[in-house]
Length: 106
Image 1 (cartoon, rainbow, N blue to C red):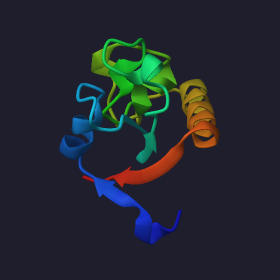
Image 2: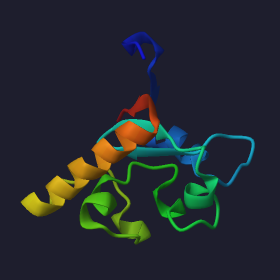
Image 3: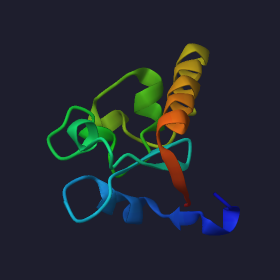
Image 4: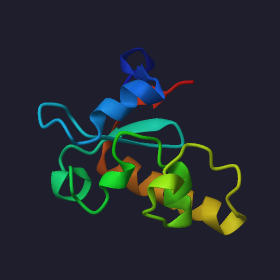
């Protein structure tokens, strides 16, 4: 995808894509990259096990292997070296499985 086609999302805009509106796609952001995970509503849709990641940059939670809503934040500066490796592994996994459709901006 060309840089020109990449959309920028604020956290507020991204939050609309949390799986609660069936007419909208489902997005999960990791390290600022927004992934379209709409093909897996059974995982990321409303009421699904990983829905806590939907509609937000869940970098910290993914690095910590946490499903707690309070950990689903973009700031991963407090992660340990091992947790940063885990976060990078998740980013690589998502990159292979889903399309990056945008970036999260402040």
